[in-house]
Image 1 (cartoon, rainbow, N blue to C red):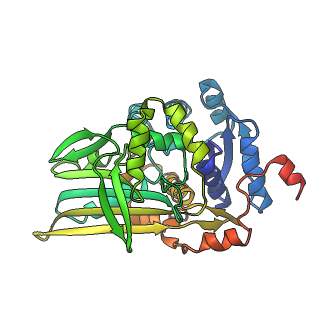
Image 2 (image 1 turned 180 degrees about the horizontal axis):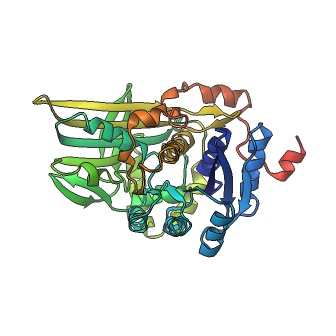
Image 3 (image 1 turned 90 degrees about the vertical axis):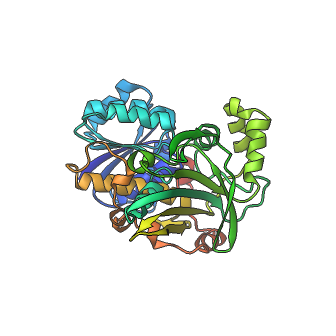
Length: 396
């Protein structure tokens, strides 16, 4: 039995805790700085018959001594940070001090660089960027890259989109607003004409058509992860872009550049959260394209996948929750099953795609629930509750 501490009882952390606990192989503690937030998730999990249950803990992970104390007290084997990116360096330091494996979901380049430094010569694994992008997209792209004798271009494209866009942004908030703004506002690492460069976010606009639907894609920060470090030598171009419905990029340019809200991100966060709705009815699109030489011929291979919301443990979870939580749980599971193989700083592209997809948590990428599942569940009023407050429980 492995002991895992999940930090952050938000949209993603709540599902991570549930998946690990329901597997039967993990004793899970879920912690959050907001009093009672972790308990709400644990109560909802227990309400639908979740195994031994999730242990809830009120913990401010920005207090290093308290965090290290919790890691030692609960004898934690692995800590998962689903906190905002700026918290991760401190969490990684606590993991190094207490001998725990470390995993996070960050898209922030500086945060990942700090984890790289902390992980030097560590006897345990430090695996940042374990979500969707960076994360699974790097695993899929690396598999394609290994099929070639030499590589010319690598394109990574990912979108987490509402199934039914009906506002001017053609978007719904499906994950961390702070993380979204960070991706839209920071410089983007790319390889252009064989040279590593930082390019501007919200630029490089292009169109992609998948299954008859037209999307736009543009530069955003962090999605390339460490792929350029692993496979960038000799490549003409390698880049990551976020996919949205056409017109979104122009609107975000107005907000971030025209109205200068990239310099006032607190105000932008309030605007988005007060005007853009959340949804459980989303779709995640994963698209990787690699061109290069195979048997002396120039060829292209693609990995394209769509993931829709699914019912897990009697509750409806969005596609972005499933892909992000499923991805990090899969790599955590692979590490703890073979800890001697994964030590120090671990890049996502070190995890074989076939092992991730065959894993009990990674299978959510291949199970492929139909896009009509969320419509049926929502219409029937049976989506369940991802968190349950005390007064809600008393009324049941």
